[in-house]
Length: 175
Image 1 (cartoon, rainbow, N blue to C red):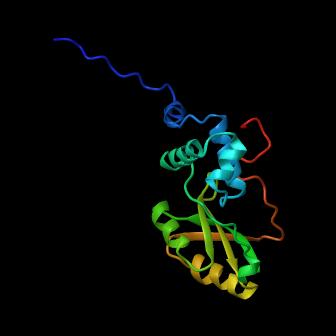
Image 2: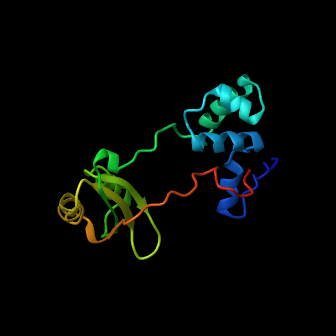
């Protein structure tokens, strides 16, 4: 009986994740950078900016979508223009419940924009925006804080928001 070779296992879990990451060249990274700034750019404009043919630009964008590097094309929305004039970060501690279940229920609540799992002495961070303080208070106290499984909440009003660099647009060595 011959022995089958044992496949090599990565020494560390991050090595496995790195092995699964797509290899991006400078042109791919430039395309990502341009689309991060303006998702409405045409293939023709992308091709001109990155100095490749339209066919190559189109193929590269499609590959980036297929690989999951680009997950969608969307608009940046101004909350205040929608009438959402007050926002808060809500820190949530949960009890002995499934994070996925409670996070999904929290994310479905009115005015909740995002739910994120975090490490440390808290469990979930929510971004919540509402038309006014009264409705924000109701959302936090009535909907979030009273949800079964939520042990405690701490709210922090957002006084000012300054936008940083979307992935792929920071002036660093990535490009």
